[in-house]
Image (cartoon, rainbow over all chains, first blue to last red; front, side, top):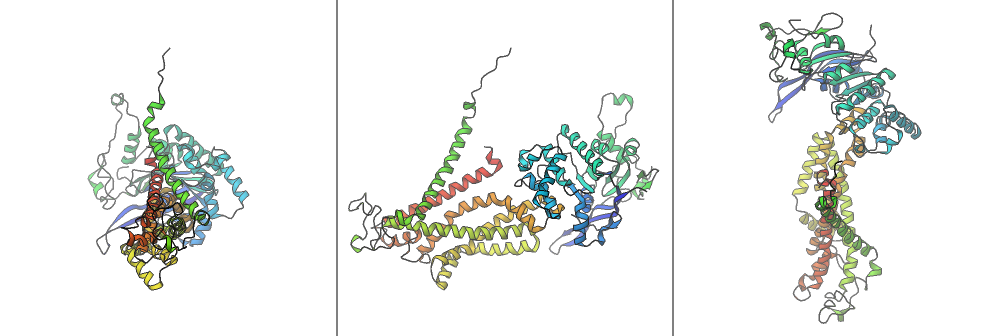
Length: 325
Length: 296
């Protein structure tokens, strides 16, 4: 049995839609609708999907920034909903790190790098000044900056350097799980690889688990062990990264991969099929009946509009929710 | 080999340079004016030729020295009971400037605290505090001040209290808006993820980032406070005699405006100077601190 660090079971998050003076609830936005996943120790799980698929809401739930409508999150086998606020603060929060997408806005412009990195330590731990000082230097060197940078302000750094600072902040408490929300998408392409390699090195060194949110498939493939493809608040395909990219089963996954490949003139001669999705993702306020993807699916059958395909295991932990697969 | 064309950068950047020199002047001048007035207030006993309340009946209503009948003994003339106008303007700086400072300290602190609380906590706290602010903004400040002067008697602290009582509301409004914006920012979200308490977030993350608009507002309200004090004195609810404030000097001169205009003019000029200096400084700071304007 794999060493599971965090497990999400049937997570749902429905936002009420209110209207009028009385604020009556007239409907629910099903941002996340019954998803389950596991993150193993030292491994990376990526959530992939269009905007509005529920990736960020899921990450926020793991970071305790959103209250789930239902479902349980198990951390090292313990149900988080059974934790008291004090326990969460003492036993769960310090085990988490987080890196945000935009390194330009994720740091207080009025704080020195020293204080930015030290904040998780100051908030969660009692330490002497010397301990703090040496930890800051250690963290800065770990992410490829130098200890002198502690005295600078964030605006004095480039995007890549800022993201390194953000990684240092996430690492400050020696977390077990780091949530990476589009960690490289705001960076220049030339810098992405550096940051991804830094993250991979840290993962190896500290046996870190990552929950990555991304839409760039190249990033996802390079970084992840396991990938979950999300569509309209549900997971449509779930499996080992290599397996999933080599043998995609769900039409949506196929379309995503197809869209991420380079289009070459000779493709047409070779008969490479290009899958182009039409239309927009339907509103999560009123998701389509049956398979949620059938409105845009090129392979949809009449029954797809009626029966909801369950997420079935097709072998080796590769799961797919499609009536055809 | 290619010949390189020499570009005269001084010419290219000419327009920008002129602009920046203009900005510097609008900074240096008001700062110099305010600095001189503060020095004047602090060293009033050394600088003033006479005590502010020395009455001399034979020297009543002397005009300034440059006019017929004026003497260099009273450079800016005397008032209706023979007090030296120059000395009173110098001593008046003490009261007028110190009232501004105290009022601004009080209103800016209250307004900032309430604004941050309302903006960051939101919900009912916000709704309640903003209604209180709306009510404060809708009251005519002068009326309240007169009411207070009548009930607790006119005086230095009555003026301070009266102006402060409603003066915090514009600060609260401004800071609340800024705090609201910051609450949704990524770095505040990050602080919440880290587990920072609301108090810490308000102190370490919100407060330092509302300082820019706060400073601008402070400089702009220097003029406002002095004008309000003058208005109160004009209505008889300000600083009572014999103490000299610029406001009550203008008021004293009111009845003699057709014969002894200098009684009102000179304190009026310094009020104008302070208000202008404050406004210029505020404009300059706002231009400097707005990143979009900073690039101009």
